[in-house]
Length: 105
Image (cartoon, rainbow, N blue to C red; front, side):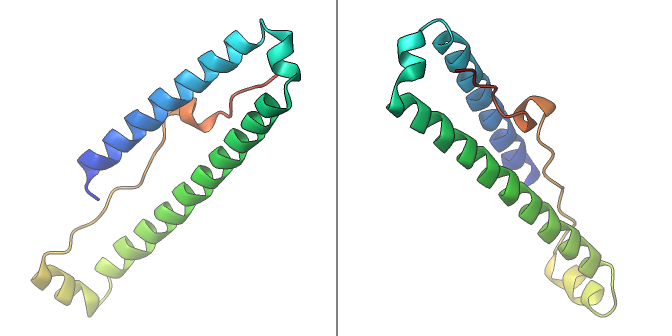
């Protein structure tokens, strides 16, 4: 994945997060919807998905850190330079994405 596609992923995640926040804000106006077991399951599943995405971000950034460190250490720096390996960028999610949508019942 290159830096451009990482930015595209961040933008897509931001758009999804904003949409979910809007959905939950609208749902506050509908008490019957909030009392629905299906809606409560949806909220739990979305929270679980957000947690998994956060874990994947941490894992990715850890791998990038290790990769970038190895690029600077002898003898891998010689091999990396020969084969065109370059330093990778960390994934930084916008602050909006880091917030889990608040769901009130």
